[in-house]
Every structure is written in C-alpha cells, then in structure tokens.
Length: 423
Ligand code: AMP
Ligand code: GLY
Picture (spheres, protein in one colour):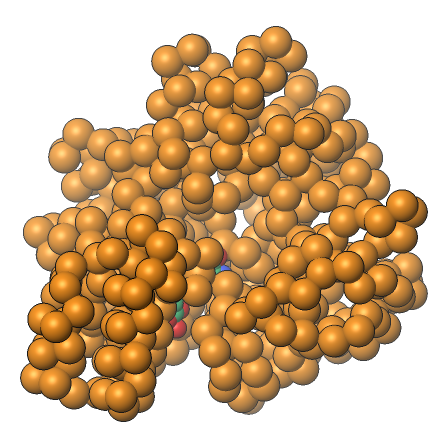
C-alpha cells in the first residue's frame, strides 16, 4: 500500500518511521519531508508544499494512494480533508470546520463554554483599548492568546500587567499578522500540564498513551514559550482516575457535541490539559493533530500497527482497533537553534548524529536540510533525540547522552526533560 504523509517536521519523521514498520505498507510519499525521512526504509520525499492541497489531491489520485495522513494543522484548517473527500480520496483528519477547534482560540473557547467543557474563564477582544481595560480589571497572572494559528508562539503567560499590556499591544500591532487581529484573554490556571491525545471517528474514540511536553525554552521551565522543547510518555500526572474523568467529562462530550453541531470529527484530537492539585482537569487548548514533540516518544512506545488504527478510524470501525504500548517510557529531547523561538538561524553544519544513534537512540529530523552533501540547520527546532527504556530514567539517560553528542554552532537543548516525572 502506498501512503501519502503530509508535513516535514519531527512529528512527521516519527510517523513515517512508525508507518514504515507496517508490513502492508510498500511506499510512503512525504510532502515535503526532510533529509532524515529520506533515509528511512520505504520513504520518499516529494516536492509538494504541505499547504498546496490541490497538488496533494492530484498526487493522491494519480498514484492510487491508499490513505493520506496529515501531520500539521495548517492544511487541515485550509480544508485538505474536505477537498480529498469531495474527490473520494481516503484521508485521516478533521474537516476545516472541525479544525477550527485549533484554528481559532475564540471558536474553541465558545464551543467549550456552550458545551460545559471545563476550561479557564475568558473574554475575546478585537480592540486593544478594551483588552487593556480588561487586564486592569482582572490583574495578573493572566494569559493572552492570539486567536489564529501562530506556530505555537501566540500565547503569553503574563505575570504582571505591564507584560500583559505589552503582549496585547504587539498582537494588535501585527506580531502574528491576521492571527492576532482577535485576542483571547484567559484566567491563569495553576497545575501540571499533560497532553491527552485520542484517535476519533465520529462518536467513537480511542485514547493514545498520555504524554507531557515542555513548552518553556529553558531549564527549570523558564524563558519564553516554544512549540515544545521535549516530551515523554507516559505522563504520571494522568492517573487512572484522572484518565477516566478526562474521557467522560471532556473527550466524549467534546466529540459528541462536534457531531451534534454538524461537524463530526475524524482524526487526532489533542487535548492539552491542566491538572490541578485536587486532580481536576481542564482544557488549556485543543489541537486537531498529533503533538510535536509528543509524537516522537509516542511512536516509539506504540507496538501495534499504526496504519491499522488509522484505517479503522477512517472506516468507522474503531471498536475493532487494538493498540499496544511498550510498558516502559520514552522521551524526546529537542535540539534547537540558538535564537529559537525568536528566530531560527539557519545553515550551521550539524555533526554527531551517527554517534548519537550508536547507543539505541533515534534522532528524528525537523529543521534540517542538505547544503550540497552537508546536513545543515534549517529552522528553530532542528532535531529530536528520542529513546525508550524500561523506566523514564533509563530512557532519559540514553536521550541526554545522544543529545550531548550532536553539535552545531549555537545548539541548545534542555537537560531536564522529564523532571516532573522523575522526582
Ligand atoms: P496554548 O497554545 O493555548 O496551549 O498555550 C501554550 C501554553 O501556554 C500552554 O501549554 C500553557 O503552558 C500556557 N497556557 C495557556 N493557557 C493557559 C492558562 N489559561 N493558564 C496557564 N497557562 C496557560
Ligand atoms: N507540543 C505541543 C503541540 O504540538 O502543540
């Protein structure tokens, strides 16, 4: 079977690596992919942009693709699933309408409010003066979010009103373009975050293993918010009781409401949770795709066939799916450019990947490219050193050692990924 995988980051590299292990898969075309993926068995990178949904549909049709799988949110929000379905092409992901759960924070908050899904209280603004008045009224800490897609960078957790007002001003001044023309201001939630990802097929769903991401750039959870500096699975904060509550009070009501409101969901639903000291969970965000870098450890822990799971979701037979996980733990440590997340310096030569992989670690590529035959950096998050072990400590030791082998000018990574679970 020929698959089309859309995207070119670390998440997609891990998905391609896992899908290539399915006996039924003969070829995986990745649009546009990256140099790391190109080295995987069965994987071929194709020169189509992940947002060129017309060209992707033509490719899937011409090459008789069995299933197309979408990695990033932008093509989903841009309507790739709707277009493929119009043309009778099999694809795994939500419609553009359902993808608004991620595409617009105001849409997601209004959806949660009218369906009684637990989440922080909020207000939405299209005008800086009114937003600033609200800040003065509510004080800090408070959370400011650009409404639209901002590659994980459109959120500021402000610990004083000055910082909150600066965030409002820069968003309305166009820091995130159109995405910041509407701003959501939210109550600050205290607790521990976890990523709870489910495969959804209409009113049916199946939870993947839990995971936890590290959004702050620096050791000790300090520094600016990023797309994610590392992740591990499982997340012990999601106890069996929390898991049950999340399924019954958040996930099932969400997917039922999506169906009731005429936008039934198929695809990965990523529920970003905040779990407080009393073990109550509320929703920090919805994403309509797998997390990056959560996918890297998740794919490493998944022992069953990923394609079979996705086929069941698309065929509305999720009750027949069987998902098995490695009983230990997996962890991914992101290696990022020195000026990430403000910038993404490019073109530095990367060394040490082979050495990093000698101790059982897998290095997934994200922002890399080839300059002649030299592998160089090409983005903010460059690589993710991912390892599995019978305990998180073991997995972490392997991943940390691997990360220390990899060099380029300005490389940075966090040495404390997993610290919450290793106490
Ligand atoms: P989001 O893109 O909405 O997930 O926000 C990015 C990050 O900002 C989250 O992973 C949290 O670390 C933080 N954050 C977002 N909303 C809140 C909130 N209401 N309270 C506390 N932290 C938040
Ligand atoms: N790691 C967070 C995300 O993918 O949104």
